[in-house]
Image 1 (spheres, rainbow, N blue to C red):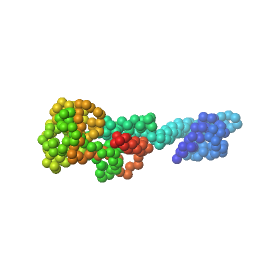
Image 2: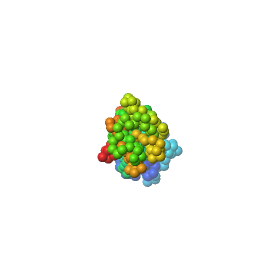
Image 3: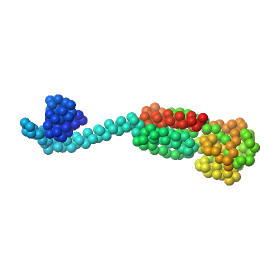
Length: 290
């Protein structure tokens, strides 16, 4: 077995042409250098240096050249590994995060910006998908509108309450009674994720709006509301920007809020970068709630 310290000694002797100068460079005794070279020669099965004696420099043998060439490559890879470990501990590693539309537009930019400021060398990969079945395969973190389930740990970030979004004047100012939604033309998200929870909640109370258009895009829904196709039930973060062409009404009684969680695989040891991302998400969510 070739030890890295022995290979480093071999390289030092080859570079310096002398056991004594190699010892000074490595801060070893000359006898220690000789012992390490002897161990390498025993392992390699032959002499690695010709030793002419006196002031003449030692010369590497053909066998020594083979061992030295591969030894330098192993030393280079070991240096790269040490550098990679140090960068990982400093947060300059890779993180894979799954997100969904509303988080991508509101919460996530704050997290990404702070991560990039703190760890300029980090590699951030983002994946956006609307799904009601969280799959964390290959991911460090996932933003999701619900708790995780079996094999998943989660952190609740915030409640995102629903509003009735309509054109100004379509409804009286102030809260709107929930029963007014029965038969009302609505534009809506696809009936997955929390949208399905919302529609089940209304149906259980015998309130059946008429859904005239479905799309995943928040901006498309808001455009259809402005065009007069129908009103929309949307979480607050989806209409965070002030817009004079829209009116937001609270509902009485309130609809169940969408809960936004951060998920990760249960029992997983976080990288420093992922651990920092979790804390930044917690802080960004608190800012949005305020």
